[in-house]
Length: 398
Image (cartoon, rainbow, N blue to C red; front, side, top):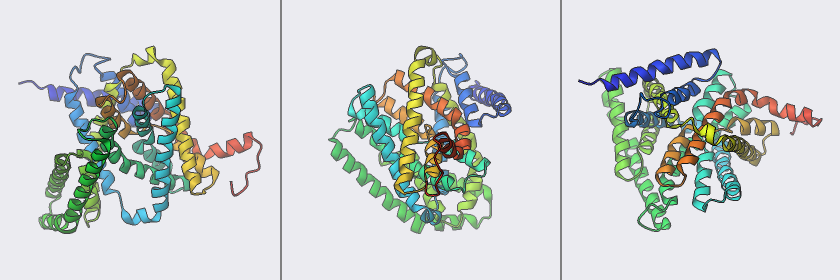
């Protein structure tokens, strides 16, 4: 009997542990350690992994659990308190990023309109995992810019689902016209919304209440896995995505009396499978791209940083908040998000980006994630520094 699965797990966790210990000593975030682990174990770097299908399965499970926990933490009560930040600020940030990116890329490299818009999709998302962790560790989660950042990241986490669903339509992969495909997509979303309402209103609460009569956390966890996989498979059957089903499952359970228990049960699994996700993304990167396209990597690094910062600043100013808050928010979310990796793979599948551009995108994303903790920690000092440099009087309204 071959123990290749155990050997793979042994190699992944062994290398990841060593790399993260080194990263910790150098004060580098653990997510960057996972990405570095992936690069070291990549088929492009070593011969240990020649087939990545198994790791990609783990990564997909990680995405499902990640979106499930995002849904669990989506509280309508808390959302009402910052609804303007989420709906207006989040929507403005995503829209400004897509328009700025698509417009500038169409001028710089002149791709098709579909390709330009898809690059806007990729740039619109920021890293929830890294930014929130840094804000929590530095006790800045409840600051003015921290609340706005949370709202924008929440909106982005929700937007990943329609962006993923819209990608094949953008590529013209459907059998019908784009308008018909879009209407069909909206119809399926409405149907899934109706099913979710029935589950949340009548079925899931009764089911969980029955499960809790057993008074066993193990049985409760098994029941949660059953519900998440069941709803995820249902959405896939409707032609949507497993990730959407997991998110809806999280939303449903969040409205029950057992949401906190569900979060506590799933958090350990979330972090384990998230590690597989980031490691698998690192495995996709070919380090040789730094040798062949270093100039383009540097260019797109600063391009993404400035475009995303500008879009974030404009989104804050739409709500007429202070410049200090706008600058802190803009630069804090000026990186590529973990869900952009998933979206990029979809774009590669539908030929919206080339293989070489995909490698450049991965390299830029990893570099931006690497500098994000430093930027987030220093974000509050950007406005005072600019004010001092320009020798402006820091009026209270600024």
